[in-house]
Length: 509
Image (cartoon, rainbow, N blue to C red; front, top):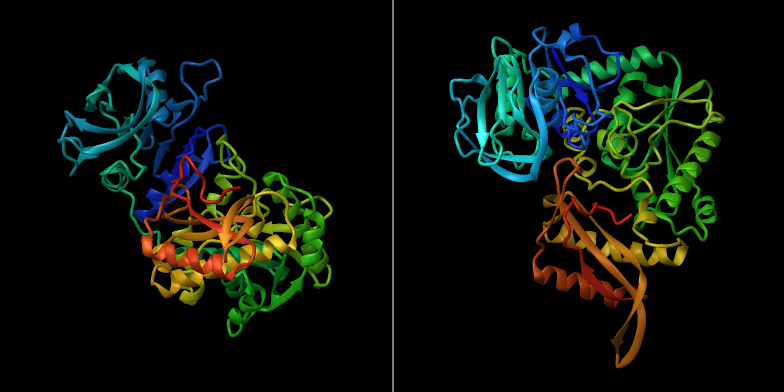
């Protein structure tokens, strides 16, 4: 039986990163909201308590009865989780005099403690809290401090119950992965055997049992997520999978034809549907980004509803939803904040008589790629940059029309082509061009112009939850700028976005 970890979510935006780090150790984990009672403690080998935007001192603090778990499972409380352990057990949690946020260095580490095995003094950690544990509970011992946080880590004596005030799941914590390995493998004795291969076998088996002899209609985008979802479903149900690729008029240049060609020879039953006019009509005069997303989502649903009615015995809508989509969209797994809505997240309207199947909804992008490699999907698909579900609609700031789409498509094609030809594409997580709703004065051929401005965007990332802008060579940017301005009518200015996520998002809308 697969050994797994339970993560209780108290609303931290970092919760999904905890899951990702755990799975990087080849250990399977599941996230549940703190107030969800559907999990059984006996099904898990360890418990991790997440951070939270709340304070344990407030009247509306998020509480659980930890006493029924302590001593039964190894427990690791992170940030709010540590404060909750301390607060519930007779410790004192108070507001910090100054907000403890950013990098810090561990000191006074108890090197005899298994949690800090192979972690040295001065190891960098990431802090993010406004409260601090002023006094430890009885029957606990301090096992690490920082300059400003005396009780940075502690353990209940005689128990495998630990609290840490920092975030090991964040990349800025240099030995965070080591700490999690110490807790899960050495202390909780979990066998790290969750791999892409085991996920494929388990998922195909589950899909067969869930779907049976019924049919699935799946929306393909040409990207990694939908392609991997399609191959998984195809291996589970074969010819009962019907794939639909919709041309919403918001794809990259010539993408509709190239994507259809891309799936030739993969054994998938794919139908192309030209729905450009429906999307353009629905998006007319809409400039609010959230309204655009919702309109696009509705039209997608309407088109799928129409196509599904042409298929016998179809009961399911397959989607390539992945974990960051869910985490950043709606609080499905806990009270974390909504950042943006997605057309493929959140269920279906009542009139569409289909159930949703999302085989990848608990995977991060890099995990999806590993699964795709296990399924022997071509690198041409697996290495493709992420592309937003709403397409170019959220890269055109303001309202949408065919003229704007064409301008952006032409500029984007030049940018992506040049990245590929200069061997930069595979070094970048995501790249694209944004069309701004402003015009600026220019001079071309001794004539005054008043035309559009576009933004080049290129970032590196591992999971899409955080991202850094790419330091592209000046000569490359100069060349791309010249080619766009000279070849795309309607553009006279090109700028480069040097914002990281956070505080900015990868996309502009």
